Length: 553
Image 1: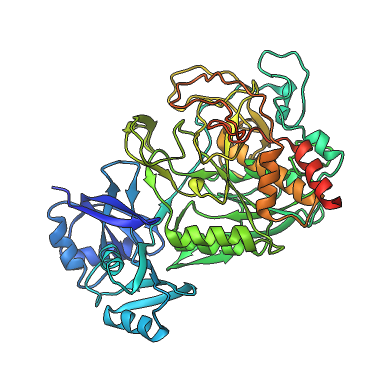
Image 2: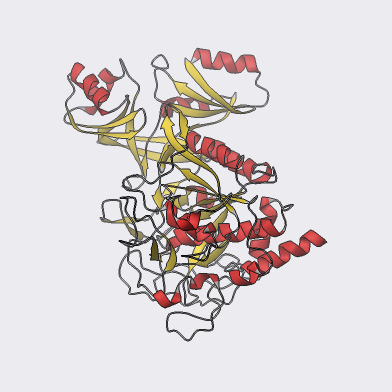
């Protein structure tokens, strides 16, 4: 029978159920894990590497007995799910964030760690530490964090979980409308059954003022980048490259961001945001701006994500994040919440804030609804149809300081897959589709660059370009590009001022007819806000004009 436990995340108590035949063990890889199991007469049914230093083991026989033996030599954890939901796995590490009360002295902190045989990994901020349990602690990180949370010296104690992220790209092909390439950038009066007038963002109007400046840098954090592509080349185009991978509790860094096997998503995202205006191929929203290409494995712990954002913050002005979680209750760790809040205000290359642009997601469900009573169906990572009917909190997309981006279509409707709710800030043009594959939706795809020629997967075979990109994956770098144009017009703006401009200048002439069923109305309220569209569809021309006007005030 599953053991019911809990952990704290985002200041909320999350109920957990342990998977009865699986554990995570500290190991240098699969061979190391198998060697330990053989030595202790444990017979795995399946062994898979989850991340650097952590291996998942599925067992035949008594899991608890096996874990008791493993823990004599290694740190081991159960694998949990949140309330039994398949797509809500909770993967603990051997560390947790520990925040002490203001009255606690440094000496008392050190004594607390000594008493519980905890190892300090890093001081995250003044009174918040990332600490590691040891074999002498006698408890795994979740149990020790829970015990610490009850101590009067401690404000919060939350596990440093491993996050397994999903790129927000629909899995359906989009028709290839060659004559209507990059419709999302302009204001169209073309009589076409799949293109409404003013469905785009009027980038051409913005370009009359600025096409972007090289000293404005857009970071795209994703899975790999073909920097040999003609549309990502030009003097000063690449502001830097960060190839990040897990190394212990931290991250290793090199400069090789070339796509590996399975990488397909980063190149088209980068093209949407900043593809060069060079007389060939495509053009991005902010072609004059520079790119910081950040490759990471889409599987990091909270602390590793915190380190990634800190690195990006010193090198970029805007970061585009086209990934996240499906319908599930995944609140963000308080330490990571605080880090993003601080970086949004004091980070970035100008120390006036790093603007986070985050995809709302493609599951046609709320970004955040802790009182959810509806059932949402979705396809899991194995392609199986699942249902979810509990609280919904979709991690970074629900953070109040980011720009959470929904998607609209070439017919100015809500994209059938686009997630919604009070967390949405703005929307941007993208493809259409039904994530449950029930409805034949109508709309054009997004034309951008592709990976072909590197022996890596592409969206359109045998082409350096694709006309079938989409999802909130594409809407998000569109907004990041508009934000970069705004900063190019007025570099003195803070990140939160840029967000305000995007919201205040957004278009509201959008259809309130949804092609897929939705548990919310899309009308704009008295404050100009819609749960489908946020404050509306970004308008690059109007945003840049407002930014320029503020520069001359």
